[in-house]
Image (cartoon, rainbow, N blue to C red; front, side, top):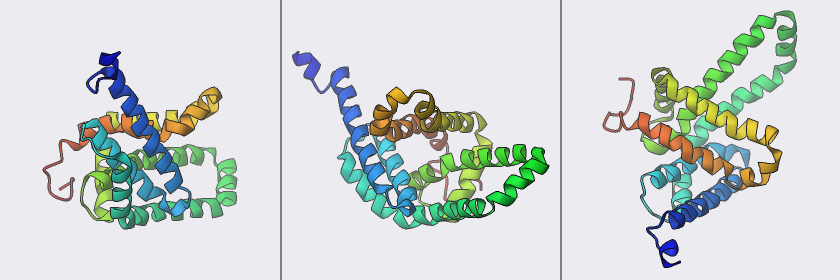
Length: 210
């Protein structure tokens, strides 16, 4: 029993990880309630999960709130750009739908484009969490990484789709657990993939593609 409760035991470390993910998942959901703060929330989430996988033990709630505040402006600037594009798509939905009906091949092209945007997005906010660049440089770097590291990009894409779409739709009995820890767990697992990419550029000055 003493060994089980030891801070060095695997059981204790697993329980501590579950607790940390539970806390930052709750903070993430709460800080996403005003939709315009979602970008800053994603950045803060990845900031914490990067530290967790590197075993840099700190108070996760303090880390989250500190990074949320520090990167709010840049993350929100990028996120509002995404919201603007989503709004334009929504306003033009009727015209786009008619276009799909008349020219079905355009549906495939748009689907490919949206998938590529998501591939790039998987890097954008983790880059804000990891590197000190401008919003424009961050998006450029995300585009570069998505094209440079295709296997990792596809893996991140599948992890995102699996955690946000497939599990809620096809495993509804897991929905309660998913809401409680799902966003943080996806960021935690994705952080391992992202770290394998980012470690190649840690010592590179500002723009990765230069």
